[in-house]
Length: 427
Image (cartoon, rainbow, N blue to C red; front, side):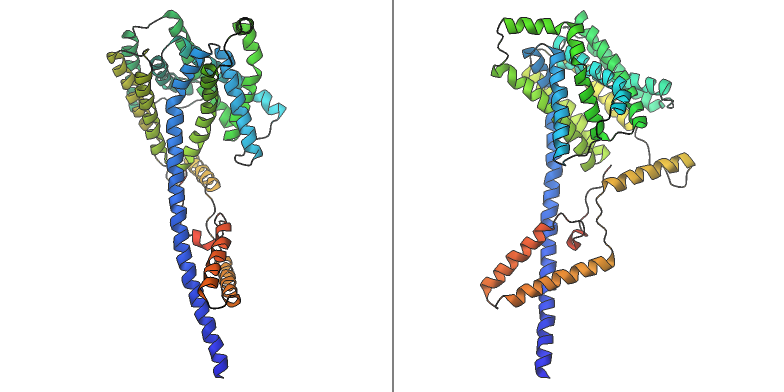
């Protein structure tokens, strides 16, 4: 009888040891997972800041060394499209498959996108970075009017109009103090302003109607814009210029040309990756603050690197434009629609909640499955203890094996020790 009681006591002791070990392992895993998650968020935010703040500077550098805006944008399209295809093949991102019918529907949006990027490069070729930032900041003023006229959106509120007026006032102050004013530069600036306005309004219409996911939009945008490159070569005459440079044995293959062009292509792809990742990792307010920091960093870097920048008064006008942009983003932030409201508001809220559910990883577990998982893990631990003699070395190996088993399942959403850890809410 006493022999039967002793195995039961040893069995209960083994279970207690296993439970304590599981609790320690759970705490250690939660701490490690939390540190890795924080490091990942900080890394994504830092990557977005670096890529966004340096992109305009690098594009300016690239177009100065390689003065062919059409060819430069075509290389950027090729890099972005190829990057999405490779990432999709590696299962890093999910994008819609290519379809001729969808490509035909998306063609007008791709043409407008191509024009916006082309005028962007031409503007950077003929003007400084400050002029580019000012005209980029004025775009929401015209987009607000376009949304009201063509997308049947309500007119902006008084706060929104005040913020747009602030942007307009800062841009006027900048233009009047721009000592580098040239007709060619401001012609391309106006063309950039028009193309970006049409691009934003029409792309919003396409996003709402065509049914592509985010990376599908990136793929279709860049691939179809790349297919338009030969037409641009003939219209703008870049083909003759490129042939002339080839005959003159230009230093295209030198590091001074390849480096800025390559960086502009890589940064164009990087800002897409970090931008989408950052939107999922942090709140909308945090993303807005990062956007402000990026523009300030661009201005500071531009003042340090280039001698072609605005005067002190022009820089103040530029900062006023950026302030207006901040006020605009705050004025257009919509409050959360209560679920007891009207039908449309309720449907919109349900759609938003559905999007959040699709983005958020499932971390909940059925109680029966959790109990079965706990029992299985306890049995594995007891089995390891019984197979090993009661010495320190086998216990150490038991810990190593158990840690390896758990490390394999760290990414499994059904692991019980991940339930107490919650990811930051997506937006």
